Length: 356
Ligand code: KG4
Ligand code: ZN
Image 1 (spheres, helix red, strand yellow):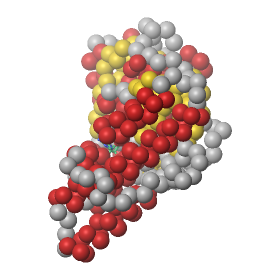
Image 2: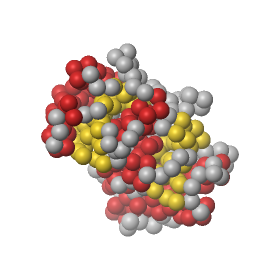
Image 3: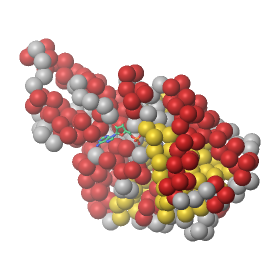
Image 4: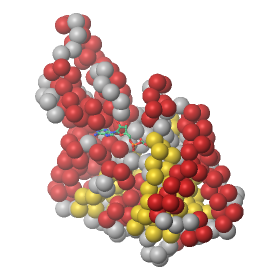
């Protein structure tokens, strides 16, 4: 794809409805309508509510994205849409709209893997070369990927249960803090003593790069209940110390597994991180230190491009178009779509949909 190609991107795989217009690596517009309020009462994303909201909001987002880019539909060269993995109702909404737009305008249609959108973000933001290593770390995902080309990924390891964002959210819920849990836990952890409580470092005793986070939540629940039965409640300092201990455990596990993933990929020059959890300054610092120790560059894209948005989908669409050409109207919406077809299937489905 040459620099001047203009791509309309659509994203609706989870709880953000998004449209964006990208020209080369320039983001001309990026509109994200989040659904946090719609799901707030349910403690997680409700697929039916999400799907309906996407169907209602998508064309509005497209209109806004075009308007903000100062373009009209005929100015667009191609239409990229998340075709999976994700909550199927939402993915279907996006794919159907993209097909309609493609048929109506005669512009090429590109079905994009949502995870490829995240994995290719460091190329959009920093123009880094293949191959590189990336840690995707969000409310739905946690995996190390060696990115070798626009559609060539090797998974070096992944979570065997919860994603770290889920663990942060559950921790916040157990401690009565607000959602999303990551920022609340990070805030409290700043005033906490990470050494006061003993948190496990799951899977560090096993070789390889797989991770596990569900045990941390159980450890936190136990420490919390011990305190409550001993003192009748939790002080503010208890909450801060629990947050600090939990966050330090996540930091250490991510750092050690990153060390191993880098050791398995000695030819990469860059280690990147993407996903909502990458917003956490303590975790970022841990990963940056690992990169420095290995003598590789560290890239953490700006937060608005780390979380779900359609600019990264448009970018991944352009990259895919360049190597694989366009899709056609037989494009299907896929609830599961692993990036690395050689890697064993990921088990389970999180609060935000399938893991891959
Ligand atoms: O990538 P994202 O916006 O959405 C998906 O998961 O698709 O990630 C959201 C997750 C939530 O679980 C949230 O608690 C977590 O990222 N998060 C954080 C922080 N900010 C957001 N986790 C830890 N520390 C943070 N500062
Ligand atoms: Zn995502």
